[in-house]
Image (cartoon, rainbow, N blue to C red; front, side, top):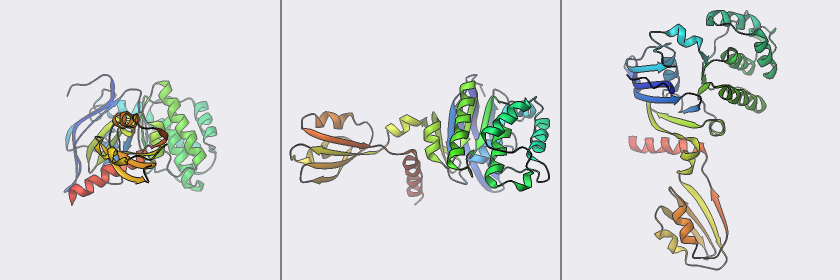
Length: 306
């Protein structure tokens, strides 16, 4: 496997079985250094399995992995020193205080951490370091997970559902912290069910379905090229049937020739050029959300299975 020095994560042909059940089917993935990459898929699609393979927490049954140009199977300690990892299910020691748990994790990581930085992050997260872990709410345990992933300012952050269980204001604070880590030069790879935060934060996204990558694209480009709905209001009544003859355009409704609603798949340029021959008083373009695009991929997958 050739190693691309501009990639923070590179997998080729990744295969993983759990007994007779296959979880990953030759997964190819590339994440560039310094980007925020959103990894999308429902439970069981293979997101967590992929992340665990990246850290050698589980071994793939085929394919190859490089993380920060290293092989996690050959250099697991070196990889983990440079990675901040937030698992989807974080297990903490109930009898420790938050500070005690973090000191323990600092020792395991084998990399010096400025404790004042820990205090600073805890303050931003509104997290009391003196509180026993057993007294923490689910949301506050999630804050501990975020803190331990960020506290050593790693070169790569692997975050499995980083804002789950947090209130909206704290979700925004965590996203700000992730953006700050990227500005510092870190690479962020995170999975999420909250597609609006992926749309807001990630420069590129990968969609995984049944252990296979079905799409990787820049977030904005993915939204731009997706199906969208356009509402048009004409100054004078027209025969809206002309809209049906425009490539990629489907007429959904035409009310008295003054109003029309169309669905357009792909570029909108052909529609704009056709409308130039008419007097248009208003036009509203409804762009799809990342959630609608994501659901469209899974809907097509269900149709293929049937």
